[in-house]
Structure formats: C-alpha cells, structure tokens
Image (tube, rainbow, N blue to C red; front, side):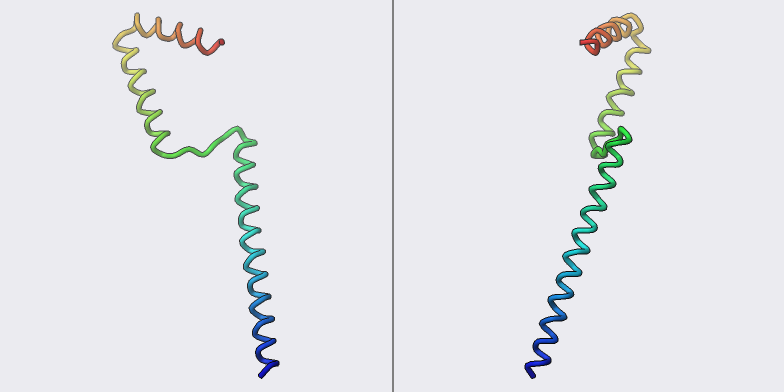
Length: 84
C-alpha cells in the first residue's frame, strides 16, 4: 500500500511540475509575441477605441470637405500643435 501511495504522490508531483512549466512557457511565448509587436512599431488596441478614432477621423475629414476654409485653419493649427 505504501508503495502505491508513494508512486501516486510522485506522479502527482511530476504532473504538477509539467503543468507549471507549461504555464510558464505559454506566458513567455505571449511576452515574446507582445515584444515583437512593439519592436515592429505596432500596438494592440481595444476595438472600441479604434472604432471611435476611425469615426472621429472620418467625421473630421467630411467636415473639412464641407468647410474648406475652416479646414485649412484647422490643419494649420494641427501642424503648429504637432510641431511643439
């Protein structure tokens, strides 16, 4: 009986160790992927944030087409703001 108990305990310990190593490996792989994305100058954003930015950009472009004089003023302001 004691041999079976020791064998079972040993197997459980080995399984737990493999599981822990697997989790650690997955975390390391995820981090490597995120680091590679960052190195490429890219980022991960929430879809809602991206969609809001796209909507605002489209809206601003439509407004500038309908109001070219004000659009030019805005672009001058934007260029000056970005140069700071």
